[in-house]
Amino acid sequence: MDYEHLETEYGQVNLLIFKSLRKKVNLEIKEERQEFIYRIYPLINDWKGKYPDLGSIFRPEELDWLLSDSIDLKYLGPNKIQGGQFIELVTRSGYKDKPNIDTNGKPLLQRTTALLHAAKIIISNNTELVSCLFKIYDRYDANYIDERGLTHFHIACRHDFDDIVKKFLEHGLDPNIPVTDEVNTSLNLTIIHERKKCFELLLRNGANPNHADHEGLTPLHRLCDKDISHDWMELFFQINDDIQRTVLVDARDNKGDTPMHTALYDEEIEKFKFLLKRRADPNIANEEGLTPLHIICSRKIDDDLGRYS
Image (cartoon, rainbow, N blue to C red):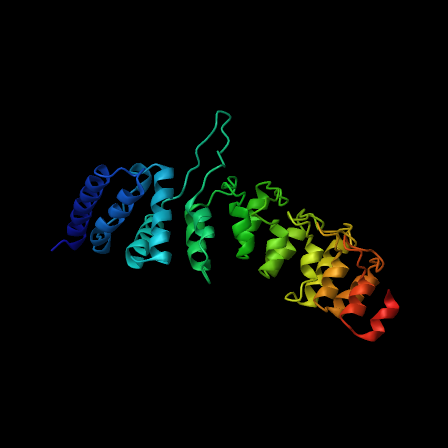
């Protein structure tokens, strides 16, 4: 018996059924999309032969919708299996997203892809999902951006995908993407999420060490946070010294606080001393008139520190 021939014929039947189900659904309606995902579940589960060419069946935005709905089903429930299976189908089919092009032949970047949608969902660890989606959205000349200002590049930085970050940079991407009220700088994200590979990669490839977020917090402010180990700050200055880039050690956030203020709020004494060695000014007052000395005295931090101010 020619099993390969049977598998091919079975695959053709599957494909015809798949296309038939597709024609019966209006993919602009969320409820119909979810129903479609449910209905194709047994078909995909028993799929034989070559996977379908999804690019010839769906438009890019339609697959964005279906993938986003599948992510919701998988991670927000209640149909986790069906949602996960559709994502797996897309990756196994070898589908690669192709951006829409403007009149000048440039990719249209304002688009909420499934990858950007996934970033909206608060999941304890969605790195596996994000890695899977980057195999679908693998155009590094197209840094898609959503309505919040979040981009694929931000997501790669947040997950420490240094190989992907490097590819974006090789395609000429400026790592200093403008901040919004909802989206931090790419460099700050690597600090907040403690992604050291991308932290170093960004610094050595044009990331501004003084680029502040919407609260005025620079990378140095973030490095003074109690949750970040001291070696990060040493690496930060070492790299900037190597490439002869100036760090504004007395940068003020929106409240007038300098990195030195931030370090003392969290009683990060070693960071405070390190900043002094980097010639940070211990006498700068914030908007409330507080200097580092005031903080030292009010919090009864190590008495020996008073002599530094």
